[in-house]
Amino acid sequence: MLSDFELIRYQEQIRNTYIGQEGQYKICNSRVAVVGAGGIGSASLQYLSASGVGNFGIIDYDMVDDMDIQKQSLYGGTDLGKLKTIITRQRLQKIFPLSNYEIINLQLTSSNAEFALKSYDLIIDATNDLESSYIIYDTCIALNKPFVYCSVNGSKIALSVFNYKEGPSLRNALLNYHSVITGNLSMAYGFAGLFITSEAIKIILERDLVLSGKMVTFDCLDYSIQTEIFTG
Image 1 (cartoon, rainbow, N blue to C red):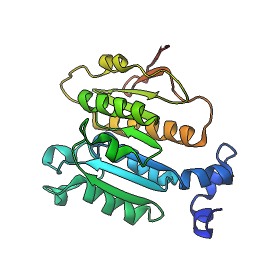
Image 2: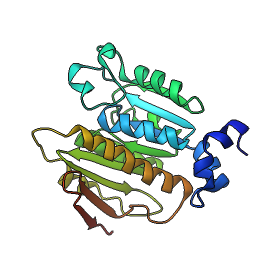
Image 3: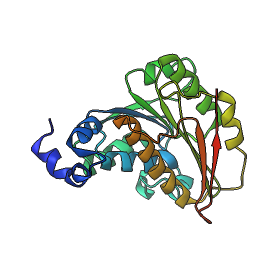
């Protein structure tokens, strides 16, 4: 099922009974679209790649600028003015050569979202943008695909899973998690990437404890956690 190289590369996860060899095979054959290659996307793509996700769609249209360096961990000063999707693929392929990275250089809109997302099994909303989250949300409902939602707001990370196994799909639930703040902490993006990866792996393996119907908010300064339950 897995190549000799994959058995060696992912041996620690395979030894873990939560994943095992069958679970690692599912991860290596999964298809995950990450919308947004900024702070949340940079961290998520690295952890998802390290976990062995085999096929990615990286969707973004932006170029690296000075403000990105502090909070988007895949980019450095030599990347200024370059497309984030191209730099992301170059960096990740060097470190994680077993994964495939398809780049989709476009700004996701209601008219192109189905085309961009239809060939993937799981969608990651790494945009941190309310309008884009609504587009992803509506498209995933139309395509019947689960998606992991995450936003960073100052020191707080909000995380949930929508449209998973007939779980709640509440469009208005997103409104409470995009309030305007003065600036986000760079370390919060690292937490966001870890949390997204945990939910993605659970969904790929079809395991319990997926955050469907729940919105968890974590503060990376005082480590406080709040959970809101959604129904309907």
